[in-house]
Amino acid sequence: MIHLSNRLRKLASYVSTGSVMADIGTDHGYLPVYLVSQGICTRAVAADINKGPLESARAHVEQYQVSGKIDLRLGNGLERVQPGEVDTIVIAGMGGGTIRDILQASPETAVQARRLILQPMADEAELRNYLVNHGWSLVDEELLLEDNRLYLILVAERGREEIAEPLLFEVGPRLLEKKHPLLPVYLQRLQQKYQRILDGLAKSSQPTVKEKAAQIERKIAKIEKLTQGINLE
Image 1 (cartoon, helix red, strand yellow):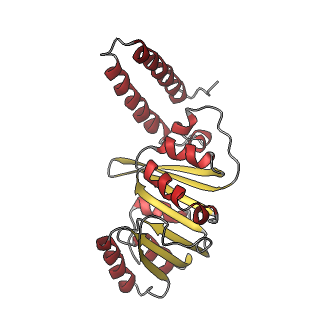
Image 2 (cartoon, one colour):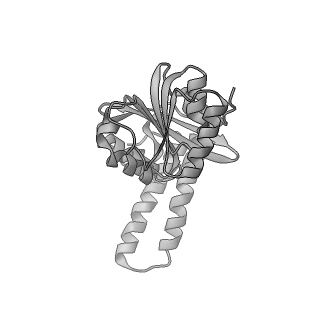
Image 3 (cartoon, one colour):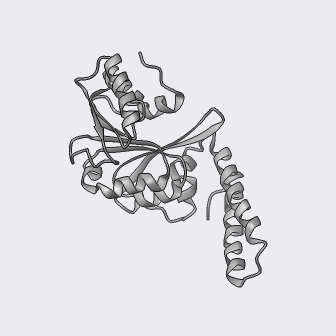
């Protein structure tokens, strides 16, 4: 059996048995090979924009004898995946803005999928905002630590999601609801990010900068309240 890292194993856990999935930016193809070889997926598409990673994926597909069930495709994002061809789309290890752009560039393919499993490396607020404003509901959010790095996983399905508090796009509504054990770490890093921005703004005396600094101070205060377990008002 192919060995998966904890991050890839957690991504795999969100793929339903009997699914047909696409792994965008498949790299070595570990995830689709695992899902197909374990009988979780009946078929998979492994796509990458670069030839090198795709050839590495091809070697693993052949090694684990799943050539007839995994299609290897060279292309950018979802451009090589037809609308309705897959019901589950995995996009992991990219920036949130890049993931958003991939979904935005192939809207028909994206909306015909039943589930999106996304693992942004940055700009998660931007990605959450896009999903919620384009007919996706955040059905789950997960955090995990691997090699001292904190990873976020977003799971979305077609549906209505209302987020009234803008800060929740950054914090994560599902993470907050289930009081994820790693949420304090996540909030601490978010607070540190805004503190660095605030420290940079302190060097300027422009009125517009002062207004922005005040907004960030209010945001930091809300994050501190959340860290202490106090709900947003």
